[in-house]
Length: 144
Image 1 (cartoon, rainbow, N blue to C red):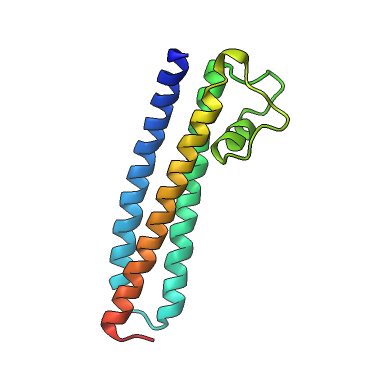
Image 2 (tube, rainbow, N blue to C red):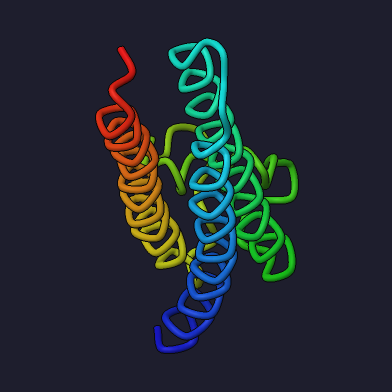
């Protein structure tokens, strides 16, 4: 059990580091982009929000890929199972339906789920922060 906790913790911390780097880049870029003068502020805001969410989705897919890589290296899933699918099912907390991990690695699924929930929450906070900054800038400039 300690081996599972340790390896799951290492993968989770790796994903947290990836997410932190992406979050810093997204917030920094959004702050700069929101300062640009633009002709249609509502369209510009929509574009910034779509870009923010798209980048965060790409980050999450990459983080699922990290879990899939760990699962493949540790031979967590049966040979015929799709390891990326299995990682997505765990990370998104969808739950097991058709693939079960090997007995000795069963704790990694819930750890991936915990990691996914935390990182989805963090992403939600960043989306809200980008929108908050946009609204604050709009109110400050008196834009509609």
